[in-house]
Image (cartoon, rainbow, N blue to C red; front, side, top):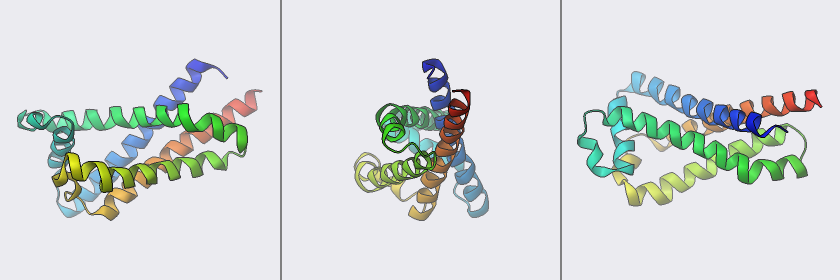
Length: 156
């Protein structure tokens, strides 16, 4: 397995997962009213509270979100993916593990970390919307990594 290729696919998986969330939340916001700028500013406030007064806080929130999405994929790829590939070689397990990982991340974020770091963020969107967001991330990340697996397997 080419390490550079794996990093490329992990980056792509995280970026695609983060983008899936942005599209979902954007669609929800368009249909129901919460402004995307408020969501972006809330993300910024979670990381750096004084940054919410900065006029680019919504854009900074988007950048923070995408960086965290890529880091999450790299974490998944470094910690879980190698074990999954060894123990469960069927490609569907990557998708299942991706989904399970993102559901756990959602639970930790919205029931443990965000209530402490930024309680206002938790109430910004309905929990069901945020849950669907993380599930879509998991599906997108799993799909990209499954495609990577198929390409790798077909080249050997």
